Amino acid sequence: MFRDIGEMALLFGRTLRALPFIWRQRRKVFDQFFEVGNASLFMVCVLSFFIGAVIALQSGPVLVERGIGNFLGGIVGITIAKELAPVMMAILIAGRNGSAMAAEIGSMRVYQEIDALRTMNINPIHYLVLPRMVALATALPMLVTISIMVGWFGGAVVAAHNAHIAIGFQAFFDNLRDIVSLEDVVHGVFKSFIFALIVGTVSCHQGLITRGGPRGIGRSVTKAVVNSIVLIVIFDYFLTRMLVS
Image (cartoon, rainbow, N blue to C red; front, side):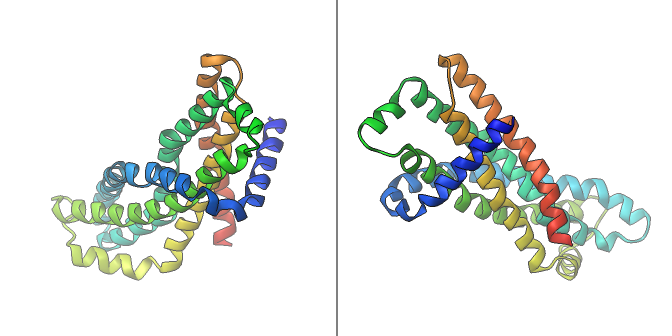
């Protein structure tokens, strides 16, 4: 475990040092950005809408029973913006794109394509890791911003059309605007940026250390997804402590 942590830290440091060369890899960055951003947009919207709907459906009747139903907009807004949108979207991207990155780089490692890159004097960090990290760090905050807005809309739809809640759009968003500030949204987007770096580092690292043929590739994909999710949850706690203090 400590060896993997050290290797991931070194990989992240080498990737940061390679940032001045990002312009040379702009085409690969664009391709990876499309895979992370555009190709995931529909799933992000569907997941976010129903996350907001479920929060409103669970908490709305309880608040209405206690005479504080007008606070539903703020509860849905703050929960999605600061916590659920960044964490759930990061987990989604880890499962969808992180696994693909680990599998692609792992297969290149197993079939000695990375050794061929080194033979041609092509740095694997510049060619494979850097474009994926930059694309993730750019696309995930954008997806989370969209996720927050769609989640709010999902909560408002349920609040307005559920007979046990019956809170109109105007009242829902008035309370949301009173409670949720721009700083809360920025906190969620900042979390997603850190989570993107975690997913990219873990996935690329697992791909680069793959051994043992197709079975090794499967193990690397599994470890990339599981380790990413564990680190996302752990870092979420410490980021929350830092941002609320």
